[in-house]
Length: 514
Ligand code: SF4
Image 1 (cartoon, protein in one colour):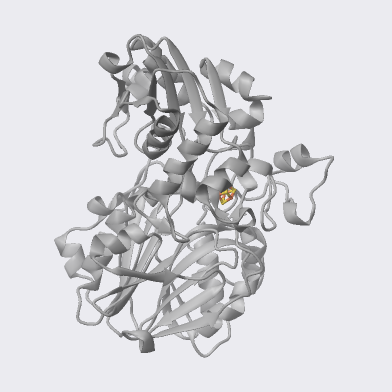
Image 2 (cartoon, helix red, strand yellow; image 1 turned 60 degrees about the vertical axis):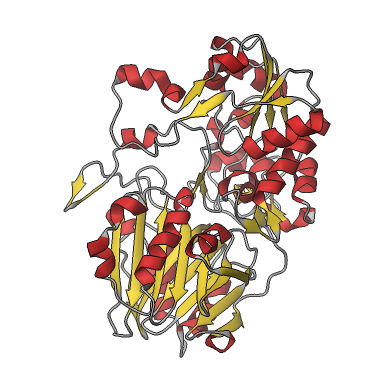
């Protein structure tokens, strides 16, 4: 899922509306942003739109800027409701009741700045040789420019700036007697990450790229099949987890039970490259990926951090909510007191109201408050899961000092974030990344204003997750991606003189970036 930052709308669009640049910039947390959640259900006799709504509701953390549901009644025309906004803002009783059918797919989306246009809201619907098809995509193609140029040469036109529409058009015009067949034929041409849900008038399909970068799982609800980005969505609707969609697999669902599901190998998976940040931060802690509870994995990251970074302190706090399990693990391993030193405004969501200058200056105070009663006179270890630009860490440290902390030490449960992500996360340009700008931990610590800082090592992180080290993507930590990426020229130059090897991709000046 990617868009084109060049086309940047700032005003109203028909009866819809788009975010202004300023509203996007108001996001107070210095975090990578997940770029989508997908959901699908095939359940004759059930209110599939309503179930999809609650599935998307559980996946809201994966994308907060737009949401959409497409259903089928078996008629040639698919039914759709797609808007910019949170799931709870996009749908109401009326819109859900206008989506009858026996199968549905849904999508929540986070876009890069400037690409949050109504045309880019998913699922995207396309018409082709076998009739209509709708696609919801989590991930990012790394060869979109090449594929799109090829399609334009063949006379295809595009309504949106999204790579998902490229997949949709390829699927629509590909040869094949079924959509599963068409998908199998185009998958070898798709480079990058994709977890897909696809709806045709008669069938629900799900597919995952051969590296399995983004998660995708299968469940059952009263004998009906369900597909979701994360297991937390299955839990929310009362479905049972069955298994993950395998990397490179296509699942075609046209009925209930075992007979209703057909598995096709779309592309051979030579190796897995699951996104490490799903484990560190993105996926919900109550989800399970590759048989690992993310809550427990994050707790073990804290325990591992304590082994690598045994600070003398009085108190351990976590940056809520994502670093809380790791902070508890760190405190337990060090035998230190754990407390809530920072209180987060959990009801803030994303505001579309622009703050005035005075409010803007308050920055993270709009989201966090420090508990003086807990922090005063204490040597504090603050645990966080990542630092991207450093723009949140610095004011957070100041909040703790202002509240009376005598020392502030910072433990990060991921290695330094030095390279952009080309595989479906919105991070930052390389020159904005604090770990790429500054030479070492000491310099980062000085800029942020902590007494000491330590990033969890890559080996320590992998040990905490407890899966083979070669089953992950480590691109944003090492600059070595599991597949070719279309790099920005600046990134290419930064990799020289060691060169860009086979694993480092084929740099393209001005290439696309999610
Ligand atoms: S580059 Fe980093 S954030 Fe992107 S998929 Fe790989 S591990 Fe995840």
